[in-house]
Image (cartoon, rainbow, N blue to C red; front, side, top):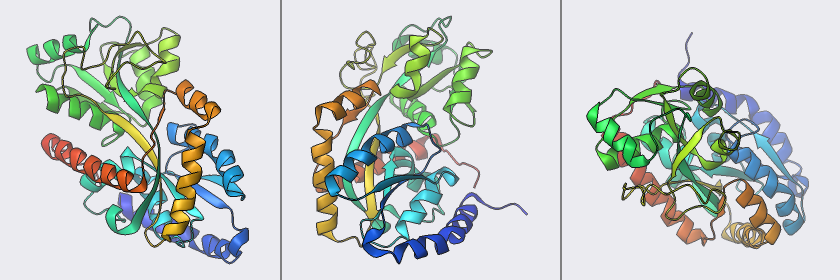
Length: 326
């Protein structure tokens, strides 16, 4: 029997429920769990593991990172939405499951506005256009010119339908009036490996941290970065804006979300701790090495940002007519 994406998510959460209930009985002894919607080693996981010990020190309690990958982030998000609203279970949310999924999946097993309360913005990172060193595409404008000359003939890779890489590319097409053919992979790693190896004419829009090691080794070339200004970690890489693509400024963001009924005082305490952490020199250095920028926002500003981000991606999903298999 074939299960839909979100039926599988619901079953996974149900199967895990007894364990979570037992943990809840321990009351104040229960550690704070940072729930990561992806496997270990990715950007969300790296950021969470950097944050956990610092948050534990500030709050005077143990903090653990728990990876719950699957169903496009729905397993993790649904788990947090159904958790006790005591500030002990937090979602390390991001563009994918908070900004994009509500428009991408009509049967999503959680509602961002109803089920979550924004606690603290953490960081963001720009997207980059990456090609094989042998590619004739040297600038973002080169891509626009070639794409308009051969509509649908150029190929771009992604980490899967509806992934950050996919949506970043679709936003580029929306802004520039171009179109490339999509080749989805099961993750950024396999996609990058293909561009390094056999698919030398293919390209990918991905996060800056995902591209750094490939670029430093000379296996891939970063063409442009989607930040408003050049990034200190890659000062020689021009922005899309200065490369002749006005309006293409996009970031992949991360932030802490709590169950919606979590008391405001609890959320404010966590927000204050995160704000102090993000101002620490060693935190700033660690974030910079990963190509991340701290985002200091009030909870209200974070909430407004999320709503604007959801609206933005809704336009892109509709314009691109993206309908993933559910």
